Image (cartoon, rainbow, N blue to C red; front, side, top):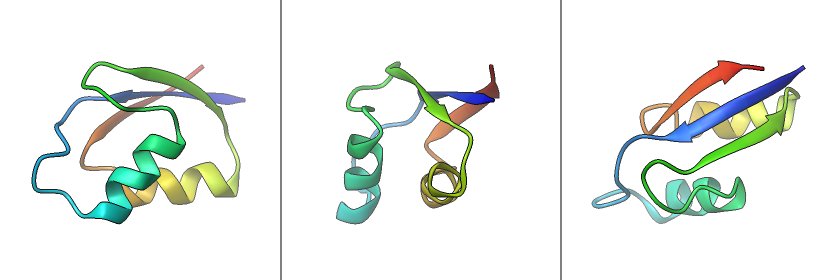
Length: 58
């Protein structure tokens, strides 16, 4: 199973660790999308920046 993740909100005013988490997933600009494996590591990253992204299952 994979997860499709899309960045929908800006990094302006966000904490550095939240920006770094999004960048580590390949999300740099609003509208960027990535497909990540559905595992505990990815779920932890999603939890950290859940207010900035949309997640759908592939």
